[in-house]
Length: 344
Ligand code: AQP
Image 1: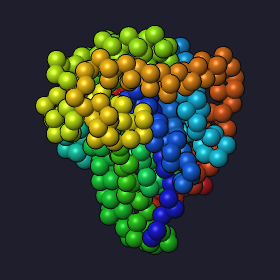
Image 2: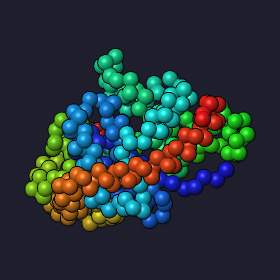
Image 3: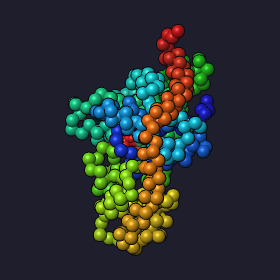
Image 4: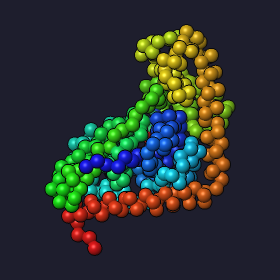
């Protein structure tokens, strides 16, 4: 059965949104609005898989919403909401907890990285996180999911869950007139020169909200001075920039900065090297500062303005949640029938 094309993605309100979130995900969210119906979610239930101060969680939920708006997502044409306001996400997660296999979740590298050596002490939610992510996407039967490279494995798991549900319940799905598949297998959209933005302090680690060093990332709310300082201090090597992409292969920090420049400028790494190759890092860094300030400055300023009116942000989330709930409720009604739950 052909599925209606629909985009879904989410961002966790776990701290300062950074350039990685922006280039890896939010710029894609904005671009997809022209050609698809889109649902963008502030995934607050994912956030509490690790401890969040309640007041801080409320603040960051509004801040991520402000970032969506400031970057240009239209909340009237599309849907912006926070996950905890649509209970069907957790309802479907339980069904998926019973579809997904323990061995599948045991292979998730993000869990291994986040749990580290303290496995016995992390929350059960952190382990089951990918099942909630599958439910987020599939409760809308979304077909396309723009994400950064780090979410690729979770998305593959979402496809495995959708496929297993379709197989396990094939007879029931067909008897209820849904053809041979109830859930689509969602396609990841992972494209462009900055699908994995790395830390400014260490080219082998991804840029992350939870890195203790603020110098490792550029936050969307950083002012021009901050952005300039962080880029100028960004780790590099003593060599000048190469003229060919091949010359970046063993130089992760240089590769990262070139990728960031290309993504901010909307061009390719090859074109950036064509312009700056052979030159000193300092010249390139100055140009990168100007570009980053020009792109991020207006977004940070708009976010700050929006954050002065939390009532407005909450109203957008309430409206989006009400519209999301309608779609999610239809899916859950069908899922309950397919699974064999009695409902009144
Ligand atoms: N460094 C990155 N480069 C490219 N894309 C990235 N994303 C995150 N970091 C990078 C993408 O941003 C979207 C939202 O991410 P998230 O908030 O849901 O969670 P995350 O991937 O766990 O992000 P962080 O910053 O690393 O958070 P913490 O430190 O809390 O774990 C996703 O599409 C993600 O791929």
